[in-house]
Length: 463
View 1 (spheres, rainbow, N blue to C red):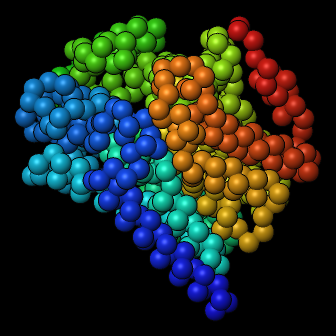
View 2 (view 1 turned 120 degrees about the horizontal axis):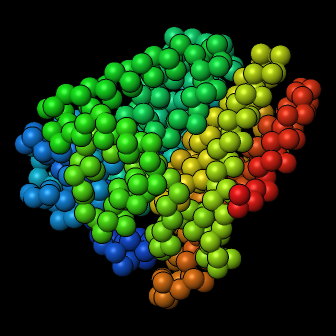
């Protein structure tokens, strides 16, 4: 054990040195040649500036989502599209800071949040070397670096997923406790009030008796706060009527055509200034694809590789499959086996983003690491778990962009190549998790519903 503690100290030391190097690279460009954005786009902080701009808008009585209206905050910005509450929850802390000072502060805080996520998962095991490896995994990846570079709030989402997965691991090993209940509640709220990636998890969490109370509480808080940001004038200065919202919600095609910032040439129209745009845009962007070198989605990869528009049904099927697996979990009689299957379903739900969503950026791949970290901390690992960890290591490393950064970033070959070691490992992890569940359902004698699901969804047609 003493030897393993010494190894752990060495890994922690290496992690600290490497993280310091990552922070210095943000200032001096040591890793400039590893990413398209650092090499050509030069958009440092672009995802952070709209967060603070949204808060300043609110103080001035303007729409939270009017990102591009004068006065600007920082040199550039992407469109603010998080939950409107995150404008206050995040923007409040940087209100008195100049743009670049605020960005630097947020960068350090983001790295600290990744460290907290690592600590939360590391508590699920006792081996010091694995704890140290989890810290390096979560804090030092190349996707984490590009997350820090653009200033995205992704670290909040990674922490949210880490809390949820760790809570279920705790329940699986020790039973439901007050700590697991609060971890689960905190994880759900962090995601719901930033990026709602946990929506696919909620059906299962509501069905399991050990997680139901926290899930119901999270939904209740979410509903009350969300309603406040729709009905209170000082929180929603450019509000639409409920009739207008209902018309848009029942006509998703209109939303897709008129409320997509990319097809609108970054013009925020009046309906897009209402706080309901956070939810409406989920419909407007759900099937949207952008064949850009920065986009690392499965749909972009397949469209480029096959040189044709792949069927939308292929990317809707995983979501249906996760829901079906959530229902099948409840057919397992043995409580421990049910919780093991539930943990795997939640991991598959985490990975679902990478096989369904059309706009996946490289920093999104930081969400792979909570899944890998949880498996790494388990005392007993299956062959499938080991393969997932190996695939996670591929995602952790630099992308293949380092071999083509002097080439034509607009060519189909180059864009397909640089997506391979992000898209393929993530898709394989999702498939392996589904395979693990299929094997578990078969072992537990769950009825053959899953076979029907595969027949229905594994090979969808255009219809």
